[in-house]
Image 1 (cartoon, rainbow, N blue to C red):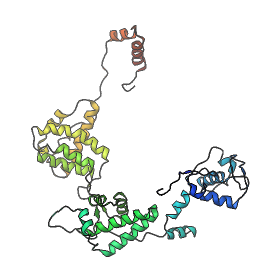
Image 2 (image 1 turned 180 degrees about the horizontal axis):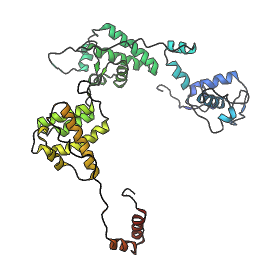
Image 3 (image 1 turned 90 degrees about the vertical axis):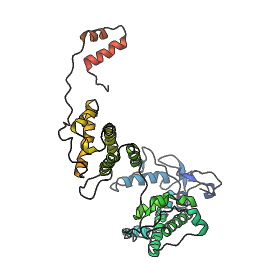
Image 4 (image 1 turned 180 degrees about the vertical axis):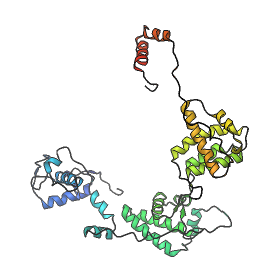
Length: 392
């Protein structure tokens, strides 16, 4: 709360925190409650001294009202039963402030029992075309701040987005200064677009803090309206590029085809759905070590044979299974995109082979069980007789 010299405290009646001395130390709701019910005394439920209505304070009545709403209004308010296990505290006057941030039309419709009016700005769509530029030159918003920014070319779209920004600010309780700053940043970016009416790039939004304007709030506004083109490089893509930059160019391009298919999917034939980021990372961690060994003697994945895959599979049953799954996904995707001629993983068994228990030296077990160290003898008995697993 800028400009408030006093320290916040709790309301003496409902114990709500965030009340200042300028409001006489009592929240607005309790001041109205005191005016309507001037009788004060000990509450018959919580024994707290406050303004009473039929022997109950406002905090007990609010707790009972909260419990009634949670039950869906199916049961009547029970002051004693709803306050038996404790009470929910609140911030002072926050319920009224949240309601005041709603648009006036929505509040009036809610009072009359009608549904809220539909958002009239949802019909806005960014332009589908793209205006190419002759030269890619860096832009400095500081220079524009000194010499002036050009006005938006699409004035109708600028007016509609500005109205939506005002309504968005009212819905989220923005201050006047924040609303003005977001509207100004929106107007600046609309005036510096290469393609009027197109979606605004996230990299362009990241430049507005250079002229002391908020980027995070503007990004959230553009994302809701559908006018945000998130062209920021993703961390996974940067990591993939760094891991494949030392591979042969042909092999790196083929890996890029597979990575794009599993990471972003494809809406054109051959179509595919994207995988989750943890799954993509797991596939890459299994495939990249094998590809690096192949790159020592091959320039392309087209030359990889079944023998090459079997020679580079890791040791261990479960590591081998995960590697086979990842490599099979790699060559199946490349075969569908016609980047390789054949799939060398077709005849490689996927299921791990069963490992038979091997005989152990009984003399060593007997010696461990009869050891003078009780810790060693106890551990040997737990392993031998209770069959603890490796994790245990």
